[in-house]
Image (cartoon, rainbow, N blue to C red; front, side, top):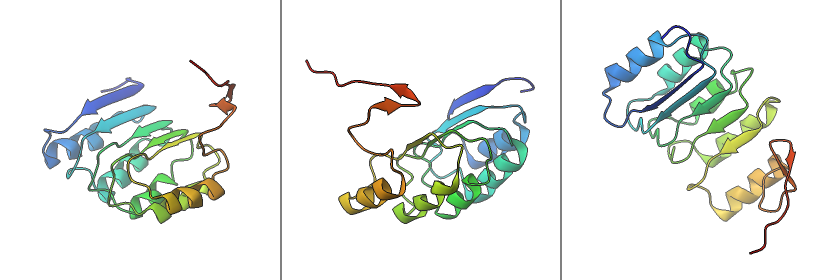
Length: 148
């Protein structure tokens, strides 16, 4: 893995040592990393190792990594170039922890569906003014309503 700009892995069947090996041997040039389904094999320490190894990461998708905790938001905030963050079904991360992400000036898209109560969503809408269902742009591009 020397020059791949992106890596997508469905690691549902990976054991912890395989995910550890993946993180410790990944090329530092990686820009996009998708490690879906790492349930109980992706932990705070591995995310910290990923941060130290891949400083220029633009996209991080940790869908269904239930071993991650609220501490991981602090680690994620250390990624200085991160634009896209996906953490759906990371149930051990409390919704209140996501407020820390407001200080990430590079973050364009935060994907955290299937885990928010109405009150938590309202809190995040106040913190991140571009959250909501009626937007006129996405990723800096103008959109319009579609009516069937």
